Amino acid sequence: MPAGFSLSMTTPQGNVYYTTNGSDPRAAGGAPSASAIQGGSTTLNETSIVTARAYNGQEWGAPKTATFVVGAELAGPSNLVISEIMYQPAEPTAAEITAGYPDNKVFEYLEILNISGSPVDLNGVSFTIGLDFAFDDSTIKTIPAGGRLLLVRNQAAFVQRYGAGLNEIIAGEFQNNTGLSGAGERLVLSGSGGVIRDITYDDKYPWPEAPDGSGPSIVLVAPETNPDGNIGGNWRSSVGASGSAGMGDGLAFAGDPTADLDGDGLNAFAEYAFGTSDAAFNGSGEVLVPSISALGRFTVTFPRNLAADDAIVIIELSDDLDNWTPAGETLDLVSEVHGADGRSTFTFESSDPATNAPRSFVRLRVLPRE
Image (tube, rainbow, N blue to C red; front, side, top):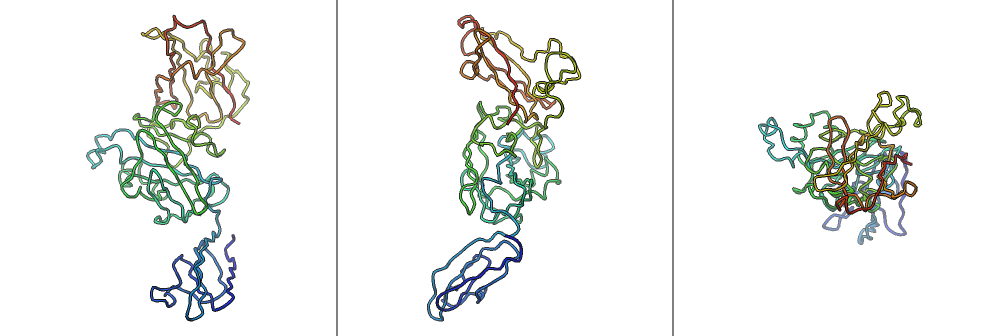
């Protein structure tokens, strides 16, 4: 509602007493409290929790409480997402240890993103499972349109690693000595309207594996589309080796997706997905590298541009080059190696020796994210 909203309150008998800070207008002894206001109307210029009672001088009516959000939207699943989770930070450097931070867990953080076009009110918003944190205890009460907020394990440690430039969007520290599990856990963010986010992240495929001890965070892919946060494939490793706190690190595709300027057989959209260049010839044009492991298993390796949120890469198998199926039940992820060039190198391997398997073909299929 807009600032200047006029709120009217009536009672069939007695007078209305109300507060705008959520407290009870009735004091412990039965008299009106010090913050109680007598009257049937008030003008709201900021988000307020109004509690009202009827009082006839002898008896009080039951309290009625309502939250009135002024100049912002009520927090809910249509406007807030958990956009980044740094659950297993890189080990501390020598300088960080000297500064008094020998434990990597103090560098944990979590990011919340407003994906709507309006400010969102955070009164009454809190983490209730996994982490303890209540925005009612924070000095930050709203998140602007498209804005990001950070919750951190230890703010002094966070500043030591990331600098003080993000202090203005740090809503506070995790409360009650809670932290993020390095093996995955359930996180529930709730508001006055109910559950906002209920996700359970993991450190095993199909969730990104590089963040489990290598330093990067897990980042929600294309968060503005409000994807399902419980699907591992909707998350990826951060582009940066230490996460992307307070900023998006996705890169939108631009140009003609069918162009092949270098004539290497990979169109521009595929080059975007793999992190190669359409201005530089890539030999045979192949990025999918097959091999046989020391255990005799069929292995395929390929790069992935972590910032390419507009692309989906699927591994498919076929025994006749006509009918293709996803390789998820046949090939297992062996490793994800996070690179300094903004790419991860993925290696998949068959569970059985290649000599025991029928002839098969493998391909990478690149699709636009819709």
